[in-house]
Image: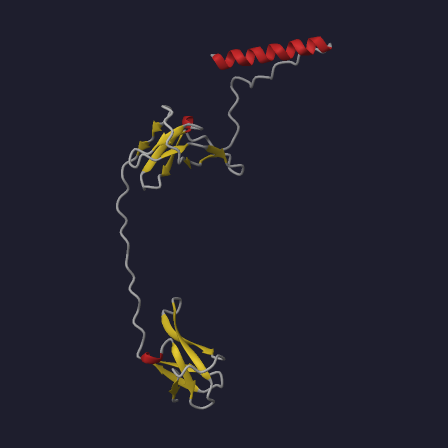
Length: 196
């Protein structure tokens, strides 16, 4: 009721100012026809769900916009803020967590939803690399790397090139391969000679 009185006072003040300037008051906005349909577009959602940082799923009504709330589980306080997505016209919940310890008496406890079922994670074990893998030296010589040579330095027996044999798993092919990198740094004494 108070808001309506303020609007009426503003309207009367505008009309008085226009009369003082010699102009006619502006006509009130036209009301839509009584049987007209609402404009097409998304319907507003009155309640949105959010997940608190503690993992609790909360239901936040649209009417709590710009109000303080707290999580019933962890008691963290946050400011409820809804913004309108320009592309869809939908209201998007954007909570702002508050670090202050201020007690205003205006903080509401958000409604918690039923707990989520525990997630079952499937553990994928790393495949075991084979005992030996063939690869080509940059000089074109076909060589084999033993398991002890994976991810280590090696030297081609034919051209003498120093190589780093990186073991790589290709998830698309579901197979291991050797990625050959030519070394240009000073010898470290840890280089193995490879035979064909």
